[in-house]
Length: 423
Image (cartoon, rainbow, N blue to C red; front, top):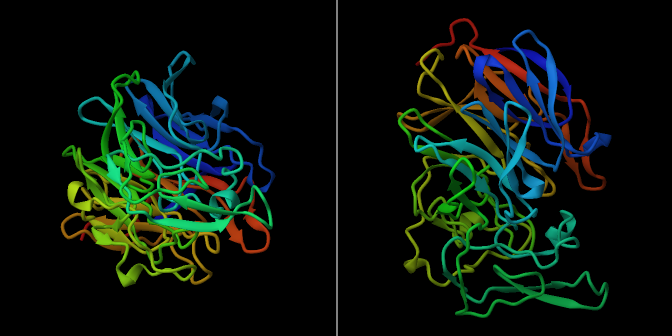
């Protein structure tokens, strides 16, 4: 596909939304990588190329934008809330008190055919157990009592792991169980009650935030979700990492059709397969075992429509309309791996776009400009071009941590190349 960079010099943007009249709304995450100024921002991009600041000082990361009936909805992941920005500039908190911020956060929102606001909430941990990786990620010291919260009643299998205790360096040891704060064991047979809000879930509410309820549980980090023209809710779910107290190897990212009341497997199944399958043996620890003892009482773990390569970090998707070269198909952004934090060093994955054909759910990489980190895709107001948000230059380094370049983010507009058409 041929492309033009229509906005450049952005600080780690994450999301784009199309408003009435063709205006675009673009969110910068507010993450202070590479010396970028902290605090999320939302910009309005007019049809004439003008750029106005709509909101700033938002709690990072700003993970999503949604336009609905003249208002803009903004997800502040770091604050665990969703705000509505009205046309007159009024800001109203719609949802608050979401779990975290942990490994993952509140993500993008989307409005369903029922008029409800749907949104995803990532897991607090990699695989339900708080470990020293949570300290490395910066939240364990700030909120030491935090942990994952199930969306369905569960019974613990008695999985506990012993680690160093950073509260007493060099001396203490800590034993931690699933769905428990750090240094708190989880006895076998203990029942953990469901709650709303919860982690690793999709929830919904009225546009004003009333009647918050669970839609589905067991999606580890459903960063992107949206509805097909037929009204089906789809979600991309990012697979577990080879890190922490319960590492899991080779877990793919998944595309699910989400049905109310469903269980999508986390923390014990991956796309319907048990984590005890040898395919998921990690390189950074022993083979994982179950943390739940009552699988038979839960709904059957759902099977995915698509399995993306492990650690490709599928983020968002756009359903292509009648004016597209592949009407009815999906374009999915693959942010790419975060080795060596999430997986031992190896070949890079992701960092591009893939087309998914729903007739057989096959994947077809798209030839595009060389993206560093595509993170969002959307169809423009004229339904003639694909908008792609590029997060920017961002890599992990074993010795120095995050290596990122501020003002390297951009918004692209892509059109089919000559001869590129529906198969």
